[in-house]
Length: 395
Image 1: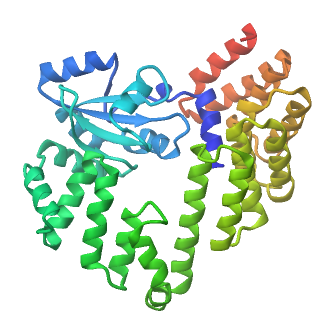
Image 2: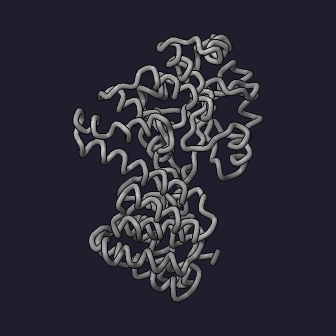
Image 3: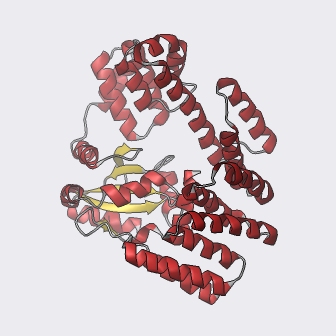
């Protein structure tokens, strides 16, 4: 549901309004061809931030990491930085070309369009700079390590080095094959192995994750039962949610079957089940079932949580079209505003009134949101102003 809030942000306040150039990384503008030409002329690599409007870690990078002076000092001197919205403009084509499957993806690409280095996760300034250094000094022994890996001739240190190289190249399938072999060499019941699993495993079907489940009793004794069981449970829930969001389940029957299977692994609370249901029906565009499940979630579990309600409304404003359902989500937006009077809740209510074609009330609430943006100096005032123009014009 956190993704919903970012949907509101994307509808109201596009990433382009955030100025990260004051002292941080300066991002170039123009087409991909123009950026490659710029990189060739300056003999620099291109640092590409593949992001989406709904991606929370992407927003965090844009607001907290890229603007920092240390990041700007290093990246502005060594790279041409470029942002690519993977769902707009040239973005979908470039995302497919470079095999982008998660966000943010930070890619280091030469002026010929070849990936030199890659990172598929958010990070802090220190690691961002370290990743940049790796891109500037790429290892030259990839082919040799690849041959030795195929012949099963790599020791522990070289296996790990080869894994890092393959991972940064973006070949997820090969990376996991290498990691599985490395894990077989180093696996034992201790904190280091558990950290290795947490940092590198992304599937509950993977050999390392199954190893953790098989040795759960031993890991629990060494590190604490709550810690191990919580991690295993959260991984199952996270994986299921990702499949919902990526529209893996094509029918309601398929979704309900997998959800039932999930309950054999972890016991879902009613709140979690309603949360998953609301996600699924939102992705499917089934507004009646979405409103029903989300309504139960709000009534039973969001009595004082305006952020949660705003998250839910992020999905609602995208799919709800029927008058009777719009009146329901208007009550949700009013409830969120009654809990906390802030710019996002006023702007959300303005969006709902816009959908209800009540221009007067929509302008009333967007005016309040604009004033709150001005007072908070949050960088969204310009986009909120654009939204007011859209309301006034009836678009």
